[in-house]
Structure formats: C-alpha cells, structure tokens
Image (tube, rainbow, N blue to C red):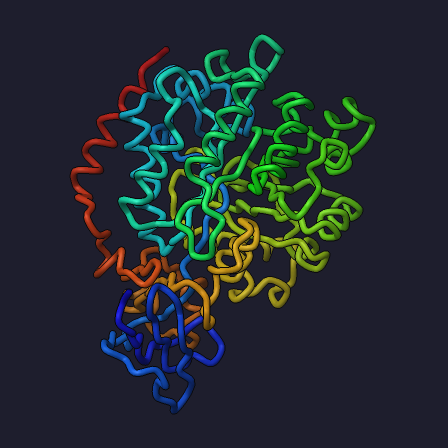
Length: 449
C-alpha cells in the first residue's frame, strides 16, 4: 500500500481533465485534477511535475530481444527480410546461450524502459538446446526492472528439412511445443487486473509452421485463456503462398486455421486488401504496426487509417534489431507519424493518433484494459518527458513537441505507482557494466560460422 501521491501541475498530460495532474495511490490512478482544482483525496506526498509532459507508459507489442546481439551485422545490413534472416538465423541458432540471451533481454528491456515503455512483449521462438528456460529469463529480467511483460512463447515445427530457413536445432515437435507453452502459462500467466506478467502463444507465421501447429495452438489458447500472436502479411509474397496453399488470401487462410478472433494480434499486417481489413475489424483482431522495421527492410506501409476505421485495434512495436537496430519505442512513435504522412493527408494521422497507438491501442492488442491511458482506475504506469533540449525550444504544443521534435528518452518512468526511472537513470541498473558485458557478448556473433 502506498500513500497518495499528487503528480502536480505538469506542462501537459495525455489525459483529459488532468490539467493539474493526477493522484496516484496503491498502484492506480485514483483522481484526475482539472484546471483550477485541488485534489479531493488527501495527499501525503507531492511530486512537482512542472518540468514534465506526462503520458501513459508506452506499450510495446512486438519484438525479438535476442537480435540486439547482431545490431548492424555486416552480413545483415541493407537487405530485405528473407536475405537478412538467411544471414543471421545460423548465428542466432548456433550462438545463443542462457548468458548472452539474458544480457540481450536486459539490454532490450532497459532501452525500452528508458524510452518511456512500461509494458513489453517479445515474440521468442529460438528454443535451441540450453535455451529451454528463455521465458523464465525474460520474466526475471522484466521483474528486476519493475516492468510489465507479456511472455510471447513462440514456436516452429518446420525448418531446413522442410525447405524453409530455420535451422534444425530451433525446430520443435508439436507435442513439446504445446506442453512447454502450457507449462509457461501455468507458471507465469496472471490474468488479474494490474498483473505484471501475462503469456501469449505465437507460432512464427502460418507460412513457416504447419497448419496443425496453428490449429492446436489456437485451441490451447482457448483452454488457457491466453492471447495469440504471429507474423502476417509482412511480405507481398505471402499472398501467393496463401493462395497456393489454400486458394485463399492470408486472412481467409487464418480464418480456416481458427485464428480470426479478438484473442489475436498480428505483427505487421501490411499487405491487406479492403476485404481482409474488414474481416479483421469485424472480429476485433489487433495489428501491431512496426514502422521502423517496415522501413528498414523495405517491407511496405501498414494501412493504419483503414484498419482503425474498420475497428481494428492498432498498436506499435519496436521489432527486432537489424529490422530496427534499437529498442526505442518513442522513436517508433515519430516514425509511425512520418511513415503515415507518405500515404495520408496530415490531418488523417496526427501526433495524438500515434501516441494513442503506442499506449491505448497497444494495450488493446495485448488484451489489457487496465493500462494505456491516464484515467481513474487505470494502473499508474506513466512516462515523464522534459522539453529542456535544444530541439524543443520554441515548441507551442507540448504533446505535439514530443512527436514532431523527436523525444527519445524519458526523464522519469513510473510503473504501478513506483519510480523505475529517475533523472534518466533506470533503478538498479549499472548502465556502463551492461554496455560492456553486452558488447563483449555480441562480438561472438561477428565471427564466421
């Protein structure tokens, strides 16, 4: 139990009716303090937020933590998706171990936290020998940083022996995938309001795993009350693959596999036609927009406006290194705005839209209604941004300035009412040591294998 804290007089907030701030108690927002008002709740402490713009904590809905060990790898840069994967898969599959994987998770989560992210999710499907405890490692590292996390237990049952590119040592039999997925949910999934850890199940994509695995995983998610995630329509080639397999486009193929429901959120979803978008909206399927990754790999532009108009929850994801090369979700907010401006009029995708995608929209993708907004009853997950740098000088709209002028590092971050970043430093993390250890671990991935 925590004494009520008044976060007082911010420059601006992304919360209607909170012009003078919010009162936080017991990990929740208990009061919005409007213009000219004083808190109704008796407050024991006051935080002077007069230097800060306050937003909900950002929510990351797609990532691959381990790949930050191969940032700007010479064999991976300046390539589209499949050649990039072909170059790096053997390194990830052959060199990842519990120690370097833990460092990769710590690095990714720390970067996300410093970019104002309070809830992370990571699509992990690299369960080579020795990495059986990968989900436990993620949960432990998130707990050490005080972050919420959705453990996205990925899977592959097809690989090089089936004409695909996944190395044999990261391919698992279906019975083991289902057993380990169920065990992960039993160990970590907490569906309660305000929970710190939840679990989702995530075959890599319908084109890299079997139809049986897709169907069995969907059935397991129903039994376990967990969410479902996968890559879909990241490449235009997937349309031809889906038609060759089923005579149908990707979304209709997913429907045949039992994957069109409000339990599902999809990564990328770029190459969709109007009918597919309508189907996703009708059934409440979420989409994680990965703007930086999509640009880096030349994958295309997600039709965010049409998706939202159809009723699709749209969130944001940092995605993997080499498809992004950092884990900064606030930078992705700006990239989402700029990428949207290539196909929409300026008023159609605004700074408030992209901030909403990174907060409320992402929360909806993860099936959470307790985070992602500054409102009474929501969890007290907040990011605090200063406008002290030269780039913000003269800014007239503080919230717009965060996006247009390029905010990238939060000054403070609060999760469940507790400070996890203060004065730009994450609590309990030796940044210099982390950089040194992570850099040393990544050197092995530069060697020829």
